[in-house]
Length: 201
Image (cartoon, rainbow, N blue to C red; front, side, top):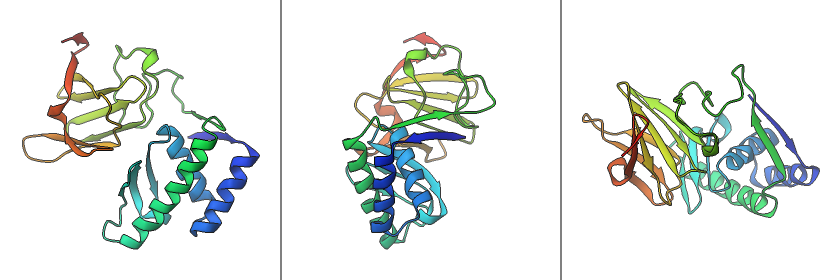
């Protein structure tokens, strides 16, 4: 559950953006907080007013659940363009934290699919993207430029370099994984493995 503290100025700006773009204030605020979690460069969201599940990456990449609705894509893109401007002007104007029944620890679940591994150092911060498909789970730590992948009881940590990861997916029968970044769709095998089962490689 998210709790947030927005400055009056940001609230006023979000209200104006919602009016200009034709979205509710609640949806506009929700997407702004998603943008904050993505450090102003990406956002993952799940809101019926913007087509359900989707993600936005700075540079123009947008995915919405209603994938063939180009009008909606254009509207959501315009909304995020305004939200990113607000974020750039006041990146520290919001305080967001996760409140769950778990202890507040970097190894706790951000959501039900975030892997829990005891060797993740606190300085990695919280993952900004996480998920699971079939037998594979992942968590992306933007602060450390690290991607954790767990499959069949084994774990790998990849160096994500300058990629800003928005999501990971399995694409074929061989379990090949791809991820979305500001560069588009990139195969996981292009990343460098730096740790296997908690040990440096």
